[in-house]
Image 1: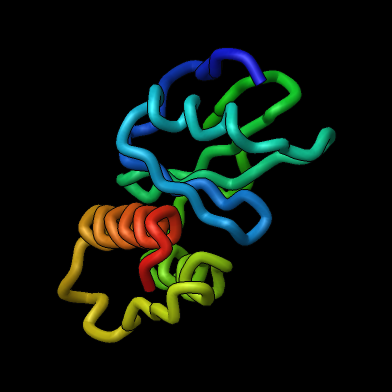
Image 2 (image 1 turned 90 degrees about the horizontal axis):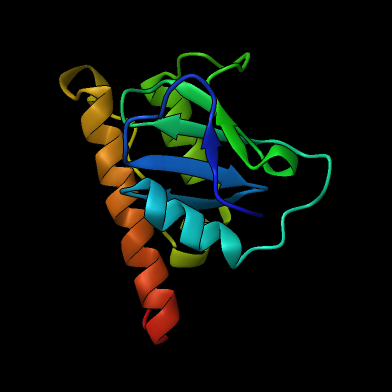
Length: 130
């Protein structure tokens, strides 16, 4: 995949992208592009992305594009947490993000927390720690 194009505007980072159950979180477009170059994405598929504001986006690998044109326009706290808790990353690390006290937490804070957990899990996986 070549350099990413953004249709109409860019998402607010960090973002979390669901690549068939494997979540990736990146703090910048450069990090995300570097990560995607390492992954073989299936042809004809699109992948959901949620940005730090909870806005839904879609990655279209065939077009090397990220677009806000998706049916999943605004994500809820429960949906973001559910995506994380059922992800392969969380299962591998044995982590579950607690869905309690959501009314006291802003969606942006939850997404930042999950992005940090995903980064930590990736780092632990690379270094062989558990």
